[in-house]
Image (cartoon, rainbow, N blue to C red; front, top):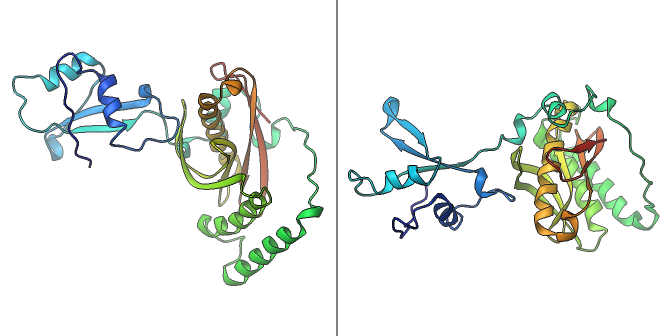
Length: 264
């Protein structure tokens, strides 16, 4: 619960002004637009509690400037998008009008193999770290998601370290887009631009691909707001879905027109 004051008058009593004030009191997921913020009023308590959504300026004015209003007002603030965790491959498939019934049926994209010969020391450190964790952990084949994340982190931080500080790893990074919101397991960033999203799963790579695709779309929407050049052209972003033993890389290409995206 957050308490705040909002000095206003009848002219300034608008949802836009209230949401602007709320942004100074709350931390919303990165990429949240004003239209994504929902505000409701709760009246009563327990079983008698009634929640009323404030849809427009008239609703807000009627509440604040009501003759019966005295004292503090309690609002419920949220965002309208679905949590990323609610997305499945099937729901994502329908959103983007894909024909594939599983991630294995998605089109394959070509990529060059990286030359790792100059990163032998980093590779050695990553392998040693994984071996150390393997000795002190249960078998990766029966481990829960939290344990698997420990092994995945070794690889992600090792790869990011070869870029001498230019690439940053941001675990549990909050983002928001037109179709989803919430934390992503790891966002990989160069300066203020997200370049890769990584999703950890105990199992069910298929669901992970569905979730990660929506996370990638939200990340591309976020990036477009921060770069004029990116907003004018087709962009692509890669996602990694992994159980720590199995690794799947997907590519989402967006033209920026509604939900016109290609998943490979």
